[in-house]
Length: 91
Image 1 (cartoon, rainbow, N blue to C red):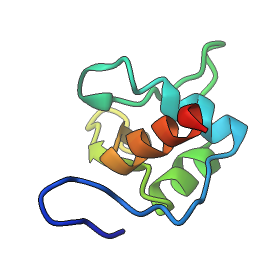
Image 2: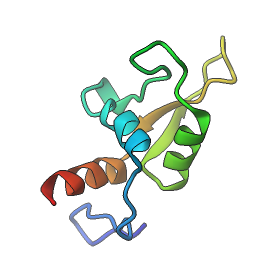
Image 3: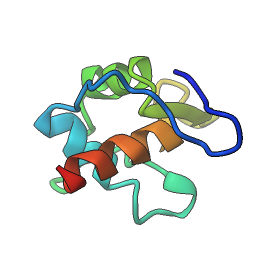
C-alpha cells in the first residue's frame, strides 16, 4: 500500500473484492467508525475466510478484542477498503 504526499490516495493494485467480501465491506460504510458486522442479515456469523481475506487485502482491520468472546474478530473498514468500494461504483 502506498501513500502519496498530502492526499490519502492508496494503491490497491486493481484487486477487487468478491461479491461476498463486497457485501460485508459495504455494511461498514453506514456504521460509526466503519464497524463491520459479526453477523449477516440472517443472523449467521460472517464467514471467517471472508473476514481474513479482507484483512489480508487491507480492506478491513481488527478493531478491538471482545473479552466476552475472544474468538470473535471485531473489525472496521479501512480507508483502502472505502476506496476500493468507491472505485467499483465509479467504473
